[in-house]
Amino acid sequence: MRAVFRCDATVSIGFGHLSRCIALAEALRLSGVRSTFAGLYDTAAKEQIVAADFDVVDCAKPVNTEAAERELAGIEASFVVIDSYRIDEIYLSGLKSMGLAVVVIDDFCKLADYPCDVVLNFTWEAPELGYPQGPSFILGHKNLLARRKLVERRQKSNERDRDGKVRNLLVAIGGSDPKGLTLRIVRLLNRHDLDLCVHAITNENPELESELKRFGAGSCIVLRQPDLSQQLVWADAAITGGGLIKYESAFMGVPAAAIAQNEGQDGETKVFSRAGLVFDLGLADSVTDDELAEALHTFCSDADLRANMTKQMHGSFPADPSANAATSILEALRR
Image (cartoon, rainbow, N blue to C red; front, side):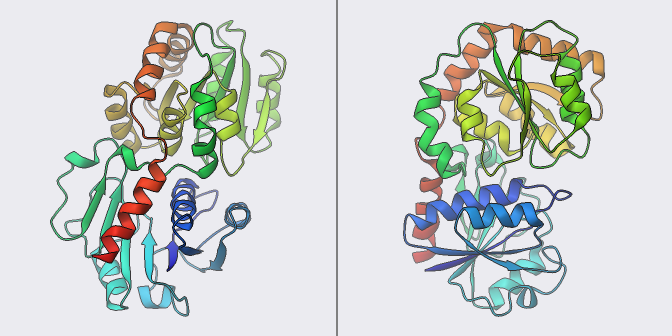
């Protein structure tokens, strides 16, 4: 079988959709499915796809800018996987009219109808969202799309002793950081004498480098990379954005505090927090510096809070949720 993944990824768009699509493509490959990625990609995105050993087809415009048949003209596939907030019912119907089976990776159940074959939503609250009847549904966190290296290194991460004081702190906001949250958080962490070694996942930033010099030996910028498996194994705790990385941290058993970059992330982070899987730092645009600094101090200082979070994480995810999702998709498409 052949799959084509239609998603976009640039610094301005972000890389979350691409990362979880690569995770699914990696899992499908275990079942013999060959995958091609078609999208609007910048150089960093293409490098991720090529590093994962998948083919790339450049699209000049984002998803649902042109008719579906023009976007995927000349690409042979048994089914298409769509991951974009730009989709609508007309676009999905256009894909179906091409004779393709259609899989939608979804987050929020925002469409009134889903004219496709399969909907995959791995968010915590997905089973409660009230999707309309029609396609097959693969819902819930046991289908988390985790990259292969995360799956391979999870046991090592879970065996780490993260009790007691935080020494190694990872700051990983996401594939893009348009609000400058990495620098803001590092500055606020400097208000407290926490004796931390901080790794900040971002691009080169002289101002941030200067701030990191005030922390313990080894504190540094770690340039954006295809997966965070090594950094999550290293970390005692993490400060993340409100998107995919908070799920990856939970999967790896790393206690995390998340700051949402938009209202969608904020609502979903609150659900994740109620499940005991993340410490909610609030919405970036509304939380004040004083509030955020106090919340960061609470998270980093409260060992019991983090220990309870880690315990909840260890019991929440299967060993290979991506393989669960891939197997369920293929079974649904064969019906």
